[in-house]
Image (cartoon, rainbow, N blue to C red; front, side, top):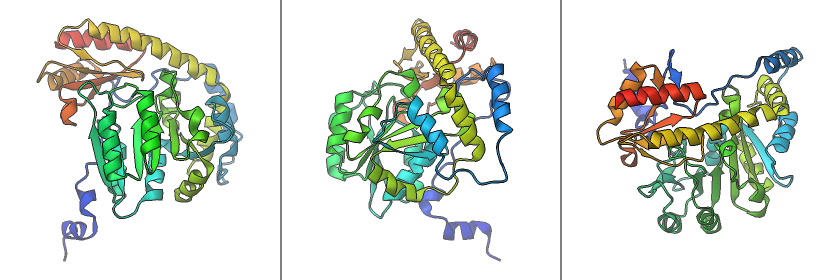
Length: 360
């Protein structure tokens, strides 16, 4: 009898076997500051109204395949231009997958500056495409000259730009991004996952550029459990990408819940404003700690670098003191000795800072 491993080696593509599955840590009872989530639960009055809304859901029927009501609320609350098309995804991850699948063909290249969101590389590999990462500068700013040269040389089908970038948290220079959009022979996808924590966006200019798409997610705003993402762009492009979307990808519960929550978007906007303020305070406190290099952030997290060789011990020490953050040391050469902390509630931030000082 042929062993399972022999069949796996025969049937599973080598590039899939070479991948590592995306790992999510189990937080247990730790203070969870590792995943860029909104730390605030929904208020009780909002939960009560939501439960009432759910009683009207017909779970015996398929969802609205186009999620019309939800799209209307998203367009209104996120100021999506009327001339821009919209596709919804089960989180922005599914939308990234749909974009790449729409252009997938032998020899095609997907490109992004690195380090950045790991799913660009992961989904490109799963789709059988080549991925080219162009290094950021040592301070994580965009090396526009190098990226433009790589675009000219490699002619990528899609360039992904996380704006603000994850895991560095910074906004790339807008003029450089505009030059990339003008130069790229294919699509440029600006991933604005952290838009609630900055005043900058390319969403308003989507109708003016033939090759520009903008990604948004509601996960960082307070809807992480919904897994709801939005892709905005020219109708012709979205018409082709729509063909890769699986039917009924947004469940009835998610449609009803998303539309309901968006009608109360001011609740979550106020929370985002609080997190922006708390981010600045946390940044200032981290800068006061000797031995740390702290990088400016326009997102709801902060990247910092420890003294050489200390990151793993800091990460372990924080866990032993009840705080979970993200250890990026070893994930990429540019992230040596780096850790990333999500902005939590003031109490969570204080607990993190206290535990961090004890670890140093």
